[in-house]
Image (cartoon, rainbow, N blue to C red; front, top):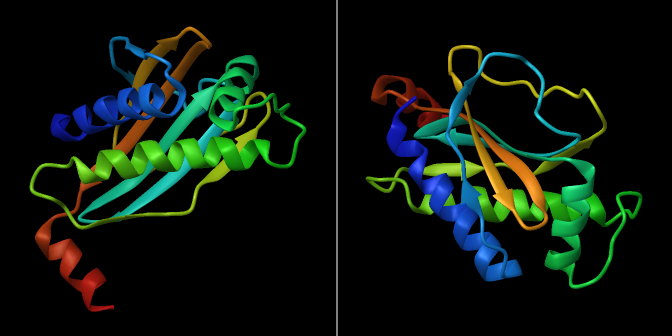
Length: 164
């Protein structure tokens, strides 16, 4: 994976959290994920396609997700509330959308509607040929991670997709 695709996500998560929730984010040391699962119990998932393809996962422990969603929504919201996954998905979408706007060369990229999975031990399907970079983040609400498994599509690979 091109390291230039990591920085936009770091900038975006810091911008979104500080702007939308007045919540500073401290970024830890990125690492490569070697196991198929996700890090925590609540995961917002966004697919990317176009000049860059792959998947982005924002993963929280349930307690951290509950605190972050309360800040985003402006009121307490428990995980059993039907709007809770929507808030997690919206946060994932804002971070992914902000990052794609920061890609060097202004890549043509589309992001999917977010999906949210909750529960211990869940897995997220990722491209097998792309390493997953895990960026640990720390906030006053708790820890979370941003998992990035994306790659730039070669020009010859992108042409048939654009024609369709």
